[in-house]
Image 1 (cartoon, rainbow, N blue to C red):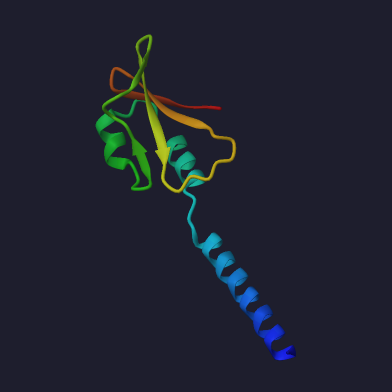
Image 2 (cartoon, helix red, strand yellow):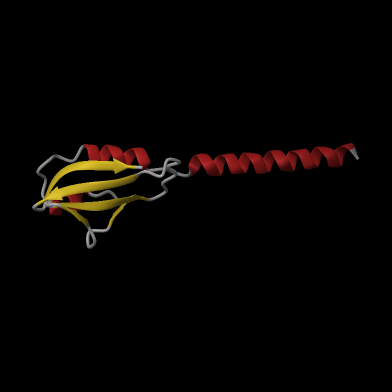
Length: 104
């Protein structure tokens, strides 16, 4: 009876260990994306930004939001676990990058 109790505890420990390893192995690209956006140079052409875009970033280049003379492109981050639910945008004027905007 004591041996079966130890087997149950070992099984629980193994499951917890596997879950922990799974959680820490999932890469969240949130900070990498913020760093990439913050390092874009103002005045950079939209084509250059598209070429420099990392694989873990998705941008809907076909459907920007238009605000006055600005085009705001929504940035989606693969594997994002942002608990605040922030929205990020790249802002362009006349196809030149201006700044990153983040909103809750």
